[in-house]
Length: 152
Image (cartoon, rainbow, N blue to C red):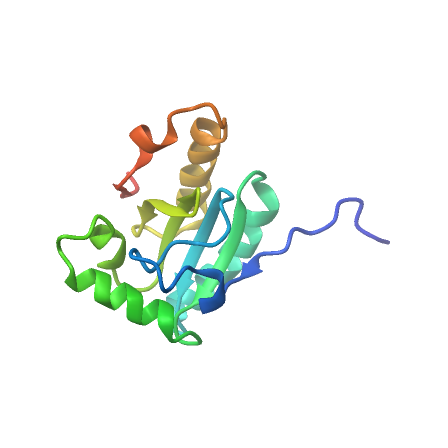
């Protein structure tokens, strides 16, 4: 029996998906609302990959993506460089241990999630995000720029 609804694919990102030579170094080339799990090969990241794939089937709206930091060269270096540059407006997005999640809109990181990685917490975070910020007419930048989320 075939699926009535096609499975959504989680996009696998590489260095070439980012504007690695721009001033901010971690901007995406794609302007879509995108949520990216930045991961490595540790147990937590492996567990999160399964959760991420499951959530991507339940929540519509953003592009779901994964970037394996162990398989890339420029993105990990750029995050490291930005984490050392305290004057950068992107410093807060770069100074976290892997795994972490960044929300991008209009190519720029807008929000970071780096706390309590459970399916329930991530679903609540992403559902709230989509409900509040999927409308293109909303003032996304003023409400959403440079903010960090810690689950309650």
